[in-house]
Length: 107
Length: 250
Length: 266
Image (cartoon, rainbow over all chains, first blue to last red; front, side):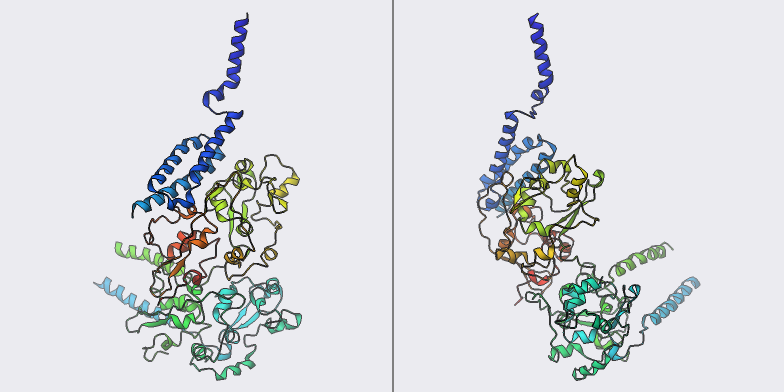
């Protein structure tokens, strides 16, 4: 008697709350905002150096470009508005590093 | 064979007719009325007499760029959207005609402009008798008058511009007709009155190569040089002013 | 016969080129109109007039970088594709226009809402005002009265206004902007003019970085990685490319040739 009830309860729980768990989109709960904060912190760290890009070495610039590339899938997984805004910001940031790197390498 | 001869005769005839039409200059107004305009964009509609504007009375005090650049007056009459309200607010005419620099927009002064009389103010014209003489237009050589400092028109009204660009290149513009000598265009005598943006790029657009490839026909239609040199600056009937090597055309 | 036909066809083409120049200048925008941008991607769908955005009020309070880099607005009208939903989520206009952010002594009014009353519509038309007769909150003449004047554009010399401390444009919003180390001071350099005897242009990075960040211009507007690599002329600038991206519609216009062409040729 108890087992089917427990099974039903688990199945219901999975159905109700399972979808997000399966897809990875958690619209609620501490883990959702933490995930956003994580990539946002990473974004801030990577793109804060645009104004001093000229003082960085080629290796550092390559590292930052790679950092941008790592962020891309994380931002693409976000909602429409966030994606729109941050993809553009990321693009500008990455392009600037690429630009400075090219000018260094052409010398 | 006959076909070709007929065609060439037709072309010749047409070009002769076109040439005749090209060189028609309207009869010149008297010197004291040359450069005077009647502005009637909305005056008659509002039951007021059109405004008379005299270029010679203004250009002795201000260079062309003050009104046509700083105050944003158009180069064609009735295009600028001048209204009484804007004048009262210190725009367009009201920038000077405010009662301090020149007579203001008071009821007593309406008739000084809104009189529909193109010859208004001609009693003051003899004041300019001492200026260097010319054969056409106002019969005054304004360019020489400025060079010889017989007049000292202001170059700006309210905001002093950063140092001007002294671009002095002189261009030789080949005529499209065979026996016509080239026109000489001196930037220097133009930059004394105007600034770059007055002509470039809207009237003379470097991209479309229209700084060189325009025709007399277009000038006479009031385009390119004709924007000014038909009714305000010395008229193009004075061929030698631009085509100095021209013989006998008048 | 075919040759004549082709020539006959070409005549109106060439004629149209000639008549493209008529010697009448376009009416310049009035000082308060200069820098105005109409944004109308999706307003009509929602039953609103397009947005009339005036740069002059915002640029007195914020730097160009804040909106065009940190908030992510594009450099051309309608290219950002802003939606009301974005604003309500706190992006784009909604970054500040959220009814909570404070500027000076005022709360910045909230932009966009899904549920609104007739009273709220007045708030909507503060921005969605193109073609409507909406009274502005700030009067241009009164607002810019004390600012140093210039001849064209808004009639305000924004550069001098900032230098003299008459405006203090903010460059940072918590949670949106990134904390950045300061930009190293750059030296001015000259750019040669294509037409001989025209004075050279003195370009000052310093004056531009007061308002912008590197990524605003590089590489989107200026892609050349070495000075002199990208060849461009006034023609492209008048079309709104390169310097013209800003200096045709928002920053002081190219009508004032001598502002840039300031190094006389020896």
